[in-house]
Length: 290
Image (tube, rainbow, N blue to C red):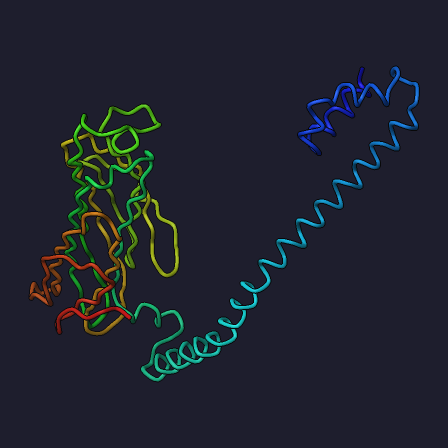
């Protein structure tokens, strides 16, 4: 009977213990499709009121637990926001004093690169991922015009046996030991061309926080290396060249190779090694990016 089934469903949701005997309970309130309809309606209204009361009680209980956390967060915002706004205002004033327009100001912070591998298997196979990032910009420091090549080499040292599926298996029907990753490359320059193992891929990017972000799906078989290349160009703003590098925390830190040169071929600076924290590289060396 439809009315019996309706009451049974409500009871199922409201009270699992009562649900064990929901059929007798429902039938006690419904003789047939039409009889005692008023009583059934009253009972359903009572059940609805009970559900509403329980929901309100749960919301109140949750609010009591969340309120101190929200209050603490507000206190932190009230404390730090004026200082952040003051720092931004001071930076903007300094940029204006140096002759930068609003559009130029951000570019005056120089070049920047970040490479993000997002595990798309999902599993723990990134423990076997090794990355080498080679960045070779050519810059006119008088005009800010720059071109660059960025090469990201992804080496998958994972075996095909000896580990559980949650480590080297996957849910996308790829061979055991395969690393499937979404690779995001963020750069201040525009992406003119992109290739995976020499084959062209779309150089499409999206803007994000002052970067141009190129995203692609990369599949690296076990024991192999896949090379992703980018050709870049744009204007970084006039002045001495510097590169802000943001590493990704991974089980195996990246090997970073940088060779920055002027359009005349003179070397501005070079680096070959590991940087495990945000850093700024320039002709003066490497310093922490704070």
